[in-house]
Length: 245
Ligand SMILES: [Fe+2]
Ligand SMILES: [Fe+2]
Image 1 (tube, rainbow, N blue to C red):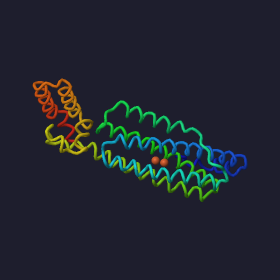
Image 2: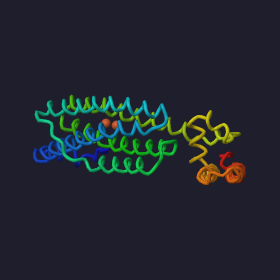
Image 3: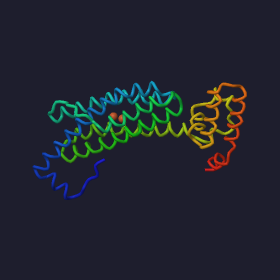
Image 4: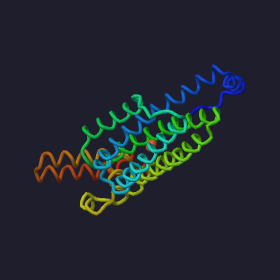
């Protein structure tokens, strides 16, 4: 997000050459954002489809609809600036989406992938918050108040999405929720418990590995042995320590 750099910059903006330069920069940023948002409309349906958590899926679907509206606002901003909408490759969003795609190809559908999808989506939101904060400031400084107002609306949506994702993530990794769970209960347990067991604690990871080993070996004796390892892992000091936090 652009911080107002002080009097020197303000004086520079009042100078005709600097004004032209900042105006050009605003238009460049808008092309970048238009491209970034377009990339996001293509990535979000794929990410929503990969999500196992219902709330996560619906948050992504809702944000897809918002993103379509944000593209409309960008087009409106171009119109207000008397310019035809153009796109310039947004390498930042492209890189973040590429990372999300990697996660989707490397991880199986489930709670860990959900955690990774939230992380990817929040990185995108933070990029957008920075970018829209910047163009809002440029527009305000250049006297395009109506353009700045458009981006304020988008900024509110991006920040609300980021907060919603934080809420979903906090629900996913609540170590207290692991208390007293057994593998037999796993069919009934919520996503919160499953992620906590898998990623929330070191003991949870050990237990998950033990169960995974039992499943891949497939033998009854091995399962028994592994579930013993699971129990041991659940009672380990590292888990007790993490519960005290
Ligand atoms: Fe957006
Ligand atoms: Fe967004």
